Image (cartoon, rainbow, N blue to C red; front, side, top):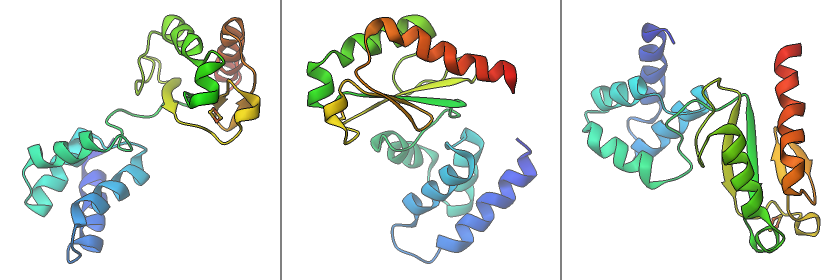
Length: 160
Ligand code: FES
C-alpha cells in the first residue's frame, strides 16, 4: 500500500465528512469500503487529520464487529450460526474450518486466501447448515464436506 495514496484517500474521506456530526464512524466506514478493512496506517491518518486520539478510534473499531482490522481473504467463508444451522451441526463445521485452515473467527489465512466469518442466519434456514464462500451457497453441509469446499476454492488460486 503506497502511503502517499493512503494519506490522500483519507484526506478525501475526511473532507467529505468533516463538518458532519458523528463523522468518525462515517469516515471509518468509507475507509473500510475503500480497502476492505481499516489498515493501521489509515487509522493513524484519521487520528491525525480529525484530531481524534488513536485510542478512541480503536475503541470504535473494536466495538462494532462490522469493522475489520485485517485484510479480507480472497475467499470469505461465512458459516451461519443462526438457530437452525446451529441445531443442524454448524459448530462442527466451524471446528473443521479452524482445524484445516488454522484460523479463528475474523481471521484470514496466512496466504491471504480465506477469511472466516461467523454470521447469524443467512435467510435460507431450510438449507441448514449453510456455508457461503464468495457468494456461493453450500447447503446441508456435513463436516466431511468442508475439506472439499475449501479445495474447490484453493484450486481457483492455482488457475488464477
Ligand atoms: S439459521 Fe442458518 S440460514 Fe437461517
